[in-house]
Length: 98
Image (cartoon, rainbow, N blue to C red):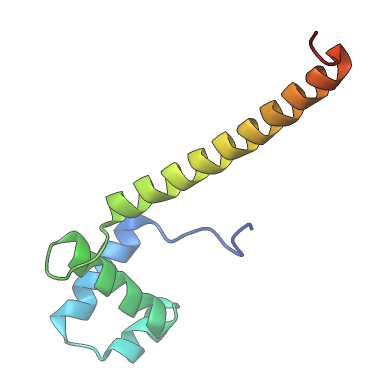
């Protein structure tokens, strides 16, 4: 499913997290000023904490690898299903062995 808009640049995220962690501006106000949802900012902060080892969970690199492996797994399952159908088709065409 395509995203409704392109993702924010990494530099923007890093700066938003830095500003949020400084505590000078309330989180909700900072999110409004940046033009993002406050939950989005919270999610970025939480993921940054995981990436930096402050909190448990999957790092961004691990999430990307998991996404890649799931995509690869889906393709392999589709290929396997196609090969299985092809083998059954050719087995029917050749007929029973004698």
